[in-house]
Image (cartoon, rainbow, N blue to C red; front, side, top):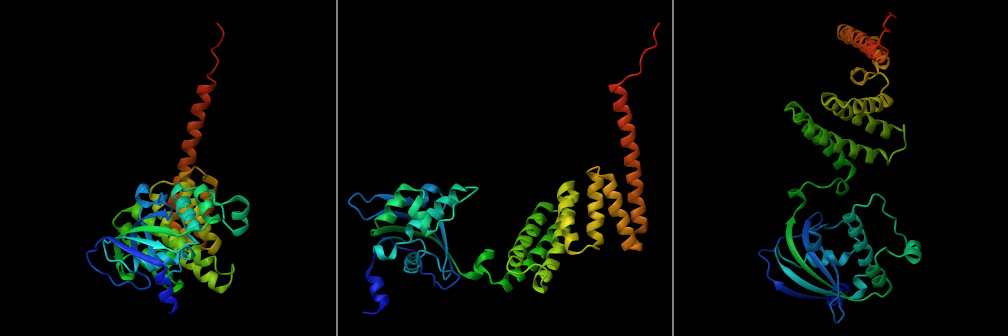
Length: 327
């Protein structure tokens, strides 16, 4: 008997509801399913039920999921099939850790504890039933219902599923999608795509040493995304977001005229008039072709300053009205 036969002997399947069709599974296939986990004790003690949480499990095959037995199980099933699997304890030793991760993610905790072996020994998993299962391993029974099976080309892959080269390709597509949304004045959609693309580049930058050639190349890819994002925020009059993102651009490119100009307009909108003037004057130094536009912006600043002075005087007069001469 080979190792595959031995593992099959440790999994006993009972079909509860026949499926509609068999879908070939290979690496990259995404399987969505509901599951119910029970102990194989006389009471059939319930441990987890995804339906109770109204959130099915999503499993991408071939990505070294911690609970390998689930990959074996779902590949034995057809679409819409419901089946029960009794699994030997040797195949489900990682279940307490997987269940903890799923439960923690559903709680959406702001701070989740890293769970290493020493932490488990000293503090436990944070769930009494999982602690008991970890201490006393036993056979488990999974009831699985297959909801959908999609090949790698049929769904939009999460960034963690992609190679670095594929991530860079996705960044290019997202930028195009964002530009299209911007041209159609769908600024919220544009912001979402620019933000997602920026996040992917930041993940890649973390792998590189700052200021090394590879890191700098990624930074240059990030610059237009930050500029596009800041332009959307400028239209929304979210001035401080514009200042933040343009300032980041200027860390990568100190002579970026677009970043200086947009940050200047944002400073003006936030009434940081001296900083706005400094940014506009720097733009004029870098690009003489912008002289007319800069002159117009500086005139607006001068008018803003005049109006502010008038407003301040009026407020001062209300606070301290002139004294009435004594009769």
